[in-house]
Length: 410
Image 1 (cartoon, rainbow, N blue to C red):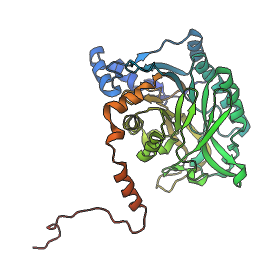
Image 2 (cartoon, rainbow, N blue to C red):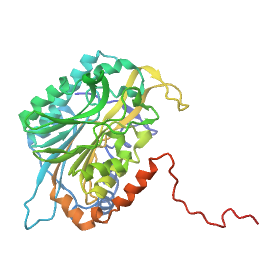
Image 3 (cartoon, one colour):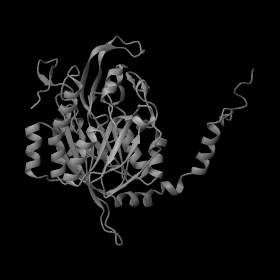
Image 4 (cartoon, rainbow, N blue to C red):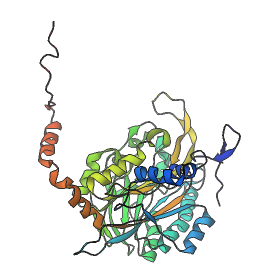
C-alpha cells in the first residue's frame, strides 16, 4: 500500500497532502461540519436533485470493497434515475471513472514507470469489472507522468501506436469483463511521419478497437506547454455507438470551449467523458461548473476525470509567466464526478487519493430533459451559423451599435 505524504497545519496536527483541511473532499468537509438538516439543504443546492430526489448510493459487492481497502483507493457509487415511461423501458447503463497518481518517481526508467502504472490500475479495473461496470474511462495520458510542462522531448518515448502496449493490456480486461474502456494515451502516428497526438482509444466490450478521438483544443496557459508535443486534433467530434450507448470524449482543455461540448451533443452523444489533468491553482473553481453546465445545456451525462498527486520532474523548468523555476506542475486535485442533464451530480472522489467512481444512469433521462426544456427546438442554429461564418473571415466587423451621444463633444 502506498503511503501518502502529510503536511503540518498551524495547530501542529498532520493532514494528508492535497486534502481539504484533512477531509477527502468538500462534500465530506460539509457533511462533517454541518448539522444533518443544514447539510441536507446545502447538498440540495450544491449537488441538485435527480428526478426530485437526492441521489441514491449503490451497494457494491464485498470483494469490491475489499479491493478498495487493500489497495487504498476511494470507492463511491451512485444511481441516476429517470421518470418511468409508458412506451420505453429503462435504459440503465453502469459507468465508471478511474483517477490515479503515478506509481514511481519520474526519475525511474520509463518502462518501469509504465509497468508500475499498469499494475496499479489492475485492482481498480478489477473492482469496476466485478461491480458490473459497462463503460470505464481512464484519465488523460494515464500511462505516463503528465510531463508536458517540461518541454523536454525525452518524454515522447511514452508515445505509442493505437494498438500499442496499453491498448493490448486493456483489451484483455475489456473482453474479460464485457466492458467498453476509454483509454486516453499519447499517440504516435507512424503512418504520418511519427506525429504525436493526445488521443483517446475506444476499446469495445469484445476487446476490439472501435475507434479513436484526438484532442481538439490544446492549452497554452501556465505550465501547460502541450503544443511542444502535439497540436490540435483532426478527428472532428465523433460519437461512438457502443453496446451500451452513444459516447464521446471531450479531452481535458476542450471543456473550456462550449461549442466543443455542443458539437458532441449535435452528433447524438448520450454520455461525454472529460479525461483531464489539471491543477488546483489553475482551474479548481471551474471544475465543478463546466461539465455540469455542459450536461444541462446539451441534455447528456458527463463523466469528469482528473489525475491525482504532485509529480516532480528531474529538471526545473519555467513557463514564461514570471514565476521562479520549479520542478512540478502543482497538485492534481482528482475530484472526479458525474453530472446529469437534470443538473444533478454526484459527490466527487477524493482530492488526494486514487479512486473509482461508479454510477448507474438511465439514458432515458436525456430525451426527457430535451422534451422538458426544448433547448434543441429553441436554439437559433441558423443565426449562430451565420455569425460564425462571418466571424472567421478577415473582413469581419462586430455588430456593435454605439450610442450616438457617446462621443459627441460639449
